[in-house]
Amino acid sequence: MELSTIPLAFPAFEKELQLEIQEQGEIRFFKTDEQLMRTGQYFRSTMLILNGLVKIYREDDDGNEFFMYYLQPGQACALSMVCAAEHKKSAIMAKAAKDTEIIAIPLEYMEEWMGKYKSWSQFVITTYRSRFEELLSTIDHIAFRGMDERLEFYLKKHQETLGTNLIPLNHQEIANELNSSREVISRLLKKMEQFGKVKLNRNAIEIIQL
Amino acid sequence: MELSTIPLAFPAFEKELQLEIQEQGEIRFFKTDEQLMRTGQYFRSTMLILNGLVKIYREDDDGNEFFMYYLQPGQACALSMVCAAEHKKSAIMAKAAKDTEIIAIPLEYMEEWMGKYKSWSQFVITTYRSRFEELLSTIDHIAFRGMDERLEFYLKKHQETLGTNLIPLNHQEIANELNSSREVISRLLKKMEQFGKVKLNRNAIEIIQL
DNA sequence: CATGATAGGTGACGAAGGTCACAATAAGGT
DNA sequence: ACCTTATTGTGACCTTCGTCACCTATCATG
Image (cartoon, rainbow over all chains, first blue to last red; front, side):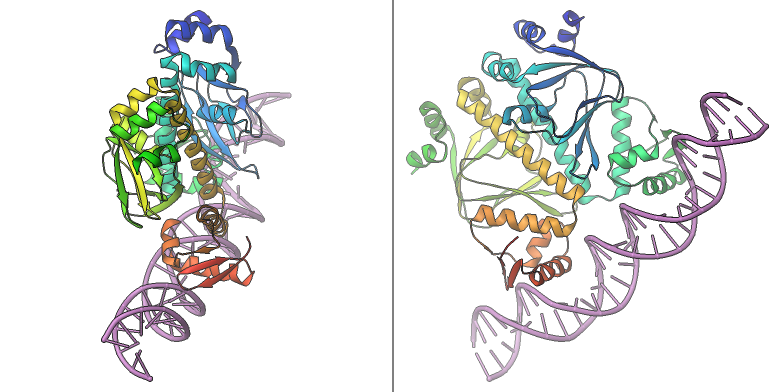
């Protein structure tokens, strides 16, 4: 299986790089809702997503969590790169949003390939770049916008990423990810329903139009 | 002058890279409080700080601003790298906090040097990495902490960066940078003064102990 | 179909922080 | 010294959001 999925998820990599990844990387599987990394962990490897979907959270000392973004096949966890390179412990959590297959690249190869494969260094740069923009937009939302707008944005993002109008989450889960409380989310969703923006079902939210 | 300041600010660069920077880069001076870039601008170059100090802000559509971090000599603006590379317009503002000298590197060299000079690609990665961490910590503060803690953190950062206990800012300026209002900052500062953490002067705050 | 268990709804209340109006102090120039 | 202006202090009030208490609706399972 590895023979086919690496070129599929990372077609831009040189053939030799793909082979090295296959040789040196360690494939791991995670079922939906399983944690790929937890806060406080040290990394000695970075993770490339082969297939599935991964949710990245920030977590503070008191256990509050906070959704940041999704990782899709062909992407890598920029945080794990940062942490691995600086020998720092993670302050993030990653959870499988679907059944997910990843390949873990040990730190030493990560560094070595930077000089050896142009497509790898390109990939690392692009990863930082896109996550950087993601973070900036996250900051905008929490700094400048209220909970109502953040909720809409959150739903929109899920709609795009999951490619469906039916978001399979309950109010409590959304509240956790926005670092808010269930009641507040319930109230705001109700208001959105009155405006015809969504339709509320048990354990799912159907997006009509945002 | 260029002959001396480039190696001084960027000692890790290869000799040839330093020479290329000097040849292709354009030196620019900014006086305290002058803007280096404004929101909405397109970049065709990235900026290296030679000396002085630069403040980086995020700005939203309604003109609210929001302090993110300082750039010191030897550092580069990661945002300008992102924007230049993606041909997107800036959503940030940069302002000289002291009289500042920078050198602007056109996009084409930025790309070319990535493959040509190991120290350059190393530098770009490190720049992303450290700004990334800066952003994460910013997110933590606005997501999980109240205004009081954010204010203390803000003052601490200024103390370290400026290397002095006398922060030359008035309440209005601080409020803008924390995206709050003058009255709130005044009240919180007063409270901190009562706790013996700071001493308030007109147009300046003296840090006693945080 | 009875009974928990889980999800969602709602009102009351409080704390944080934004806004408004205006008073009280400096600082600086003339 | 006096006037002007910029800065800071303060009380009243409002909105948003978090929290508590408790209720209702829905689902799954025996």
